Amino acid sequence: MIYSTWISQFYSVLLLICSVITYVQSDVPRPRGVSLSKAPLYSPTKDFTCFDGTITIPFSYVNDDYCDCFDGSDEPGTSACLNGFFHCTNAGHRPQNIPSSRVNDGVCDCCDGTDEYASEVTCSNTCEELGREARAEAQRLAELYKAGSHLRVELIEKGNAKRNEMAEQLQQLEKDKSEAEQIKNEKEALKNELESKENEALKVYREAEEQERQKKAEEEKQNNIKESLEYFTKLDSDKDEILTVGEISVSSVFDKNKDGQVDEEEVKYFFGDRESIDKDTFVSVTWPVLKPLLMMEQGMFKPAEEQEELEPEPDADEAADLDTEYTGQDDEASEGSDGAHEEVEEQEVESEQTNIYDEETQKLVAEASEARRHHTEAERTVREIEANIRKIQQNLEKDYGLQQEFATLDGECHEYEDKEYVYRLCIFQRVTQKSKNGGAEVGLGNWGEWAGGDHNKYSIMKYTNGVACWNGPSRITTVHVICGLETKLLSVTEPFRCEYKMEFSTPAACDESSPSSQHSSHDEL
Ligand code: MAN
Image (cartoon, rainbow, N blue to C red; front, top):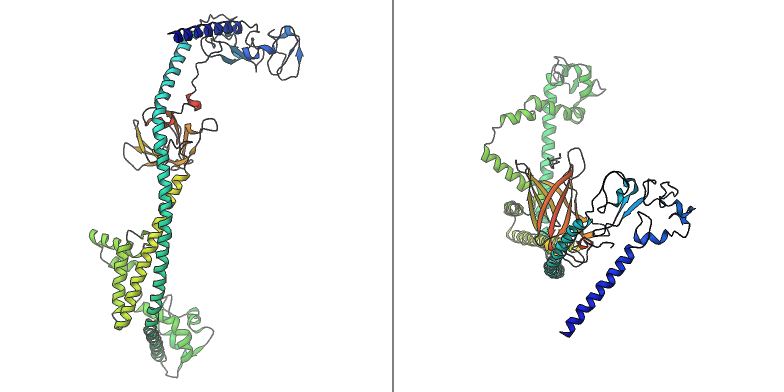
């Protein structure tokens, strides 16, 4: 009881002291338009020096409606200087500095009406009312920040836990990676060993294959020579073993342009500068250029278009089959999805090939194939682990706020609909826009950075590099992050073409120490 009386007495005295100070402060004599803090610079007993220090003038020149100072500091209470400022005290609300050009311009700018002291308009003092409203708003925000900060604490805890979990996962993955790499190396060593045995065993077959190939090539060469000599004999009508211009002129195959005669140029094409050619020259010089023409005449070369027309159109199912086959065989980029398909085909081809080998070789080929498969699998595992590591590292590099308060929001998606579009914001990931009339989703930007500046960094998120605007730059989105008890996308606008602005509320932004929370209702008086 005694204690509470003492407290109430203490507050009464404090209030009295404050009132006295307030009275004294408000009563400090100062020229019109000068703030309390600048009052000492205007002393009636001294000459006045402009704030920029350039000129000193008698005090009577202050507010004489003539601008003497370059910085306008001698006319705080008139509109004489274009660059000056008029200070309104606005007792009961917030003080304000307005450009001096607004002094006595017929518009009430200050809520206490002091800017229109010599004008035709009479301004009523609305400061009390405005101050009340401002204080109520400040109070509302203070309560919101207070309630939000409790939720924020939870988010901080969860955020830190998430980050720690990611760090642990990363450690585990690094371990998994080194194990997987070891397995891969083992599989590679085994593969190399078995492949060298396989190669050794196949050497014999390869040599035989090579011999066979050479034999075939030689046979083909001989057949070609034989064919050319036969053709030579056919053309050599006088059988003197020399082919003359006269002899080839009667054969239409030498008439390249099909104009009904073998002219000089065509002869030159087949004979060079020679008048006639013997068998050897025919075989080595003429035959290689003549053969394709003969084949063409015999209809063995057909223009590609004709061939296509002749082939029947595959029906839909067949076309689908063809497509699958194509992707399976040729599209290396689709490894993984078609990997199994490819492997089966490879196995089929392999088993077809191995049938020609003896049992021992077949066994070695099978073992090497198995080792190759295992090695490929081990390589794939390493790649998958590496991809996971990269993903976690990227997340760990993200700036989730000073206390990790935004971490749990990563990946959360929030939508907002207006008349035309559905917008989707996936925090720390991307922003998209989908027209309600259909069509593809349009990327409005990918997570870029915090862009609230040094003052309030975590108040704005920037998503950049969206889909290019027609005839313009890439789309970008700025997300204004404000304190709210609910995590919600509040609004989306497009203030400039392809530049989107979102307002997003979350308790993570309810930081009572952040500049956004400082909605002071402080007045000078
Ligand atoms: C689409 C939408 C709009 C954008 C125009 C620009 O219609 O993405 O938001 O303004 O393209 O051409």
